[in-house]
Length: 297
Image (cartoon, rainbow, N blue to C red; front, top):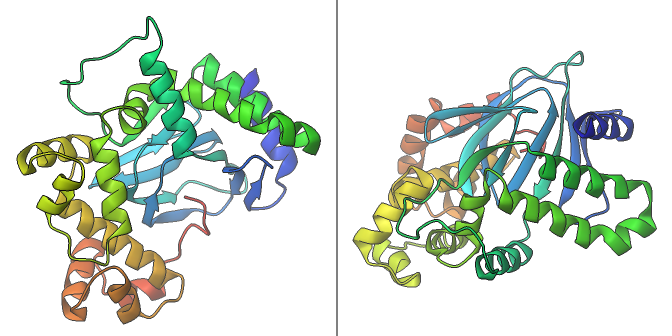
């Protein structure tokens, strides 16, 4: 019943396609009725909950489809391709976009790890992927509903918003995606910190040794843990991030050469070759034929 209430709430607040703010920082509602093929994007730490329809994401060549049975939890910046291939006026995509606040998630993750009786998994176990699909459970559903119900009252939102958001974060950390989220935001979050460093320095020539040193790991250990968390090698990851961000800039109207330089490419010919290898079209061809998800990723 609670999930149905969330869906009704979104339908009542969104009569047209687009995204609307709820009043709680980082929490937005969205509606899409046009089928949009997958296009390059970068997921920042985010949870996306679908109430109607389905979304598609491609990560390192693997296709993920999620709907109202699973919410998407991305705990690290990830280069993906995303789309809404089956959206239509008769079956609109309805959902909630929740940006994960690093400070609040970190505080909660560390509190959970420190709590007496907290269930822990061995730190030596394999790292989860930074992109996970989690089954809706009652705690997540009730917490999300309570958060969104605040939108009916600006005063309630101002006073209770952060508390309700913290309650939702706690439900995420306890749910199916909890282990991945605790590893990304809690103690032992070397890969998440490495990705943050890499994402902030895409335009620079940074070596794997540099990145490993930033997080206090040997090159070999860093490479192994990184691939476990992202399915990609660090070099593949940086290339995907650069190309995706450049593709987003081009689709938004940026000049191809400027977009290439802004993400660290010195050679425009190398950029064009790698772009075509990944997307099957030259940057200019792609820019003319593709559109982004109008900010709805």
